[in-house]
Image (cartoon, rainbow, N blue to C red; front, side, top):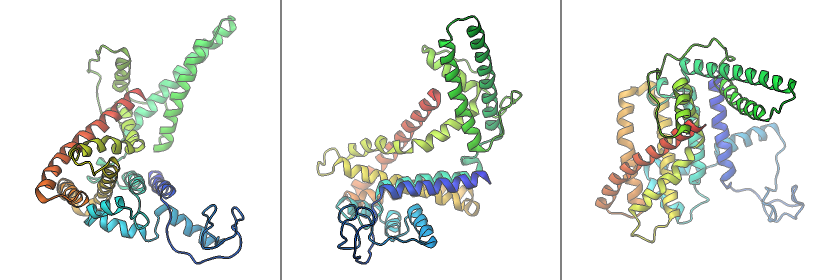
Length: 364
């Protein structure tokens, strides 16, 4: 129940962020008088000084309308954008690049909302291959989180005793104070993870994870910092996996700058296509793939894993081909070989993104 409420909250938060970067459109009747925000004389439906709408609603119904509008942006733009994104993605990309901005949801707004929606759906119903493929936190991971919290609490208590002994002997406690602050920050992170997944308080008797056993793995790299990080992974492997999941949620935007250079390589000899064109292309494409995962996650109980697997393998290449062909005005053969390269580039970009998550998980 808690994960479902948090998932819905994530979706609303994502919509609000998307609406914050998305300029509103729509028509309103002309108003007379002064702007309630800056006091300028109104000559139309919006203030020409600050941009605020001339008519301000003050009813409870208007409040909930604004919440729905801000969270989901239901004002016509979304209904003009989604059909084109699904059936004619190249036309949507080209029209947006060429200047039709007011008619469609911007790429970054759609991307932000789709990412938050995807992780919200993962939290509520699981991924496209059922709960096991979603963002569900296993009992082993919860035990590792509790165990990590217990270890840090004992370490904090030990450091506090050392500090008291040093203070009683009138010796400096600066070094111990630094260690205490570091442990407290780590403990706050563990406690935040416990609150996020609804885990009970940490326990010194929390058992060792049975889900992933890395006790026999030998850690011997030439870098001491990496050895320490890998040692922490071996001690709490499920907690490391949980960090990867939360990292994917926080840093999903990094897929855009990672992917754009690969698309640029395919059109480096065509100077009329700029970096902005490729960024719009990539952002719309990732938004569609994210929404595809959302749709397949929702219909997984009806379609099953096999049909969902076929859809995941077959739909992205078709969508990439259609978007490439129309967005860049390519012929069939030119679009086909670029689609093949784009699929490889997508795998490379995903690998780089996963490497980034690994680094963040090890150093976090």
